[in-house]
Length: 250
Length: 315
Image (cartoon, rainbow over all chains, first blue to last red; front, side, top):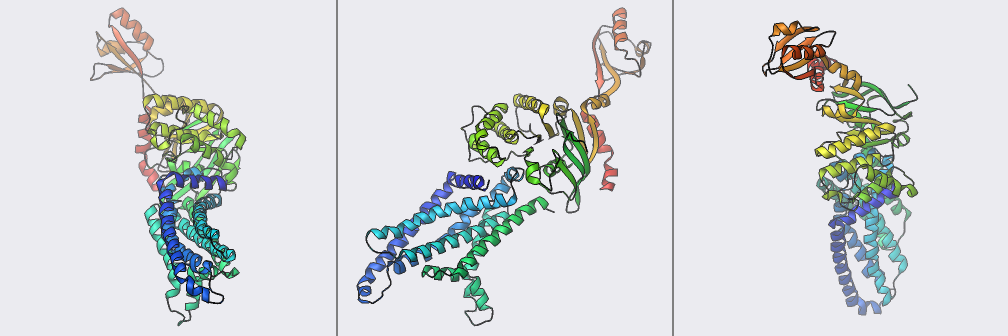
């Protein structure tokens, strides 16, 4: 049942020009960033050759590319997730799901997986860029895999937050704005204090960026993975509660 | 509670903050019944239907669908319901076939049976030749039919239709009414509307709801008796005076109406036959003779306007 809902969600995304234009624009920008990183690498190469244990392609091209990709996706995710639940409310199609023999959990998880599969497609296309380097050079696949895992987790958390914000309102644009605000806040929350205050560590811990950076360096830390998984489960849980509350509306 | 009841509702109550939308409503729906739900705007028709279909949670009361409690086992109970809300819940970007296929999957129809279910539903709703068209490009009437097809695709025991004929042309309305009558044979149907002839045409039971309370429940046949008023309307080309009409057997009273007709009141025996005979013998040249009936509108207005105050107090 979950997959039926997910498949329809994904299908509807691709039936609107939005998904296609998002794919096109995002990949164009990421491809441009990728090329500029390659150029930087080529400029550095003479000096790197002289160094012992110099950073490889994975450090100089892939890590910055994925770091930038996360920021681009932070801007893009609200546009994809904004309609997920708010549009159903607005066009009164939600009652189709509510009166069908499916649970709230199935509805929310189905919708979430639909949106997530769109991002997986986007990330798969992005992964092809660094993988194309294999044709001409050596690539640390372990680092690439860690970075990809990090990016998937980051985007999956973005999407979970987006789905929750979309469950709060009937207006897709409101959902987009609030999603963007919350994502940006969680991204930069560690800027405050910079280690001077007692709370700074806690704030740093909350930051999505802080948990992403180790993965980009190829450090797989279960704390970081757990952080993202908790975030996803938390916001999916919130969305289910929220959808259930439409039945109980005062 | 009888085992026959498809829908069993007891003391259903729902508040919107302080306003009471549905107040202590109880009724049963048996198989083969078409129940007409009438009421002015804001009476609580749609709220009641949303409560029965699980779109709203009640503050108090019990809902059983085909013997299964909706609140305890929502999934099993919802499988027995088909619901068409006021606005058909269609995805405009899908084609009719894609949409109905999705609905069939949502209602857990086994994969092998979907094609058959799809064809049956399309056939019943006259959607045979629009299967490949986008729902967004269809007219309102066709979208409404898609909505009905969605509600009956899994052959549910109970079909709940919220104003199913709104926005349809007269021919479509007739078709939909025929469809409702057909469905009514082996399903239980609850239908809300404020078009009163529709109730007379399709329903075999009527409930009028007002300020969230049931104010009138009767079979359509029982309602017919309410409609009879013991009076006749007659018109003559050569009208006699009122006095000679009063001589006719059975006539209690007669009054001249402004449009040239005469209203004749009677109590026990229907004087229609006698009037016709007298007209022939006295050359009154009778050209119209009709039993006068109150319309459902009048009952409706009586019930919903006259007792506004006690109900407001109660609420």
